[in-house]
Length: 261
Image 1 (cartoon, rainbow, N blue to C red):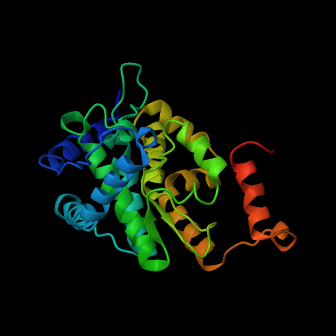
Image 2 (cartoon, helix red, strand yellow):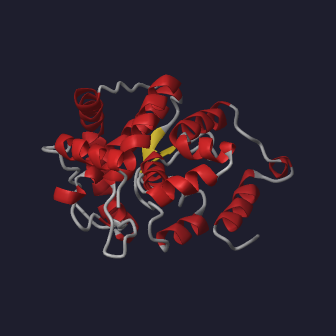
């Protein structure tokens, strides 16, 4: 059972969700199951509508919750803190009480009780656009992994709920600098649902160490700061100095795909 303040926030959110625009790609199937051509069609739709959806989401936040977000740490902190109160309520649950997988599968559709997924997706787009504003070489890509790490790409394609062939941020000059804001906001929302909506979840949260509570609460802000750091101060592994680029990428590919420990 939801805590009383959370129940009131849910009513507030349901009112705000009326007439929220549907994210409507041509292929409403988990992207890892799509052919490359179909995934590109979904990606092309994403690229066409992303600026409009970010503008609508930011306006919606201000109009309904008096929250202003922007592409700096203060703006992302405001987005994160709004998510602390509402992100967990954007998810739907199945009969077993677990979070449904419709964020990845589009089934059930993102209408009615599932309308919150449109907001969650736009939250991810907005976070991604804020990162691009601070990291100019970043760009959206349908699959920045497979061309560089083919074994890892094949592993992700076989793995449900890993956002394979969904838009991600990539940097051609530094393949190690990447971002998965669309995926990350879902994980954040799951954390908020687990720790902030029910009494037993609140108890679990307060049993965590203070450092862990801060990481749970400010997951999006921490991610925003960490990705910028890896972009502007790229880490160079010692093995990179001992191998050719191709040899090092092959090693990373084997490790990322689980072929080597």
